[in-house]
Length: 181
Length: 147
Image (tube, rainbow over all chains, first blue to last red; front, side, top):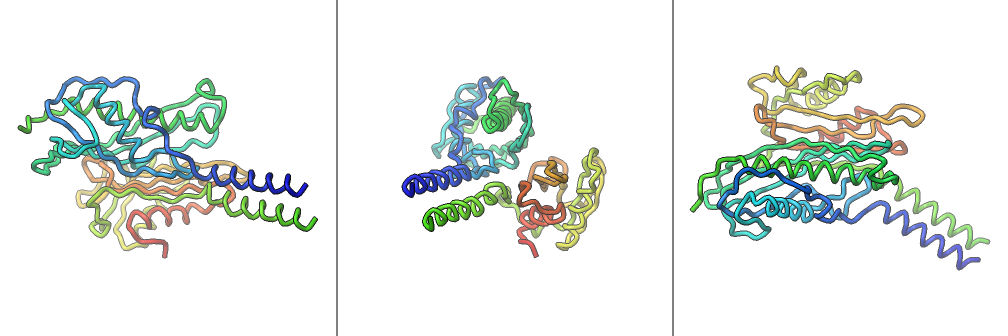
């Protein structure tokens, strides 16, 4: 009886504690499925991200700096916006992405999340800021996306962030950049 | 029997200590190079749908922290404003209505690029008044913890 109670107590404590923090979403869940890029810039770009969390509390959208940067790199590569994109230093440009706001929906059959991310492109050689914009995007996750509320909320903010990446990369592809070499 | 009670007490204590922590969160994201002391005059952009007067609470808090604050729309920002303030408040019902989250963002006049963004999330059990949540967020934005 006592052993059973002990197991129950440990299981309960673990369940409660793990509910308070969650691992960040993998980059694949933040990467937009398709990005409309109009121009391919000849230079290379290094991506950094800030404003994320790891571990993340249950009140936060589970986005780590690493996951966000990887998702942006994947979108840049997929779209071919730059000749090369990665996390390594020594690139022609540095793209700094900062999370300012990602809503966590609480309840609802349809859950809407809004995200605002700031994007700054700097020329590495001169340190000159060549482009800066912030984008506000939203995504609605429906009951069809997941009948489980927690998962539906995750789909909502993941979709809002993916839409933000898609919009920013598309805008970035339209920025007239002078060749750096 | 005594041990059983102890385990139940331990379980309850863990639940009480951790659950409120799960649903109360205050955070801020500052743009690199942002210096709060350079922000002397702010313009709070009132949400058209805001019937609760949150814009007045935010402006009052900036004033309490020594700033000059005006309230208006996005189109009537005073030319000498150092920052434009936008916000988003969300409310829930649990016996009574309460503010579950408040986001406040300081923006560069003109481009509206964020300089700093702060958030307070409080669920029903750890709810606070809108005034207290405004104080939490604005204090973080200006690097002035609640006083």
